Image (cartoon, rainbow, N blue to C red; front, side):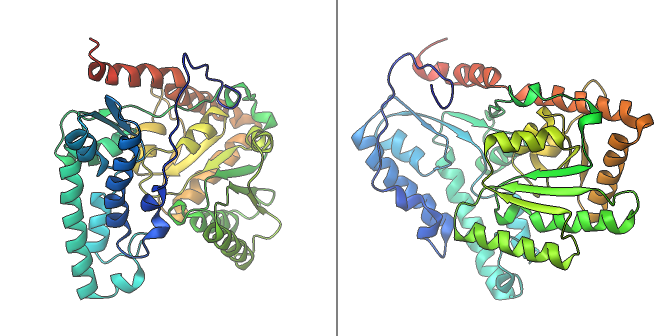
Length: 379
């Protein structure tokens, strides 16, 4: 109740698992997906031996636990999939020999290594599909995720249930364009797939193409540092910022407090998101609820579910290349700055906040309970 504001009708029993390391990616330098997948089965055995429920609900993506829970322990199985362990885009990226966060450049440069990895990915996708069919109730957090699960698992009953986003405090921030600075904000963990380097390049392109109009524009990148890898990426971003000539107009802030983050959100005019094929994008929802107009990647959840028209009016902008991001930032910063255009900017703010209201805690709780009700024998 103290941390989440939730009053439970009865105590919840938490069981600490000693085999948790088996689903940690760091435990598998090679064949990471397969290692975590099979490790999930052993973790499930330990968990279910210590406490066997009538309904087993997975929200971590441990698909190999489903046949264990259903076949060995007789549980009804439900899952809430945030991100498919493997996706068709990942398989296509390997086949096309593109270097991505899941496809090392050394593998992409080699034909035979690419062929081996492609066989591995296809075999894993088949194994993943087999395990997924043991789930009775399948929920996905976005249209994009649901589409992939339907295709990979050949499942027809997949339902979309958007994740809960508590935006109560964010929705109380004023929408007045006059209080918004020439400030672009990004909020995301410093993971490689978040593509923070593209944000710096897009912002540099903005200042290069419109130097006079955006001389006072600033970019603030906020994120949490989980480990040494994240710390290294932050250092690399700071070096890149200097190389691009952005010293003095870019701030990379790590592990900021919630109050400090609210302060930045209340001042920013534009929000930046650059992850390709983001499954959902809660960070974008937070931006929109705060009255920050987003420029998000034109793919995945942002394209299908989040930055969508409201009552026929746009709630933000979508982009893919550095130039597209620069053009969208230029347009939105100008709307927020010019007195004659602030009415249009205020309308974008209202549409963004209205779009964000679709992802509330109450809507999620009602949908989740409705989906699981049949597993408890309720109509």
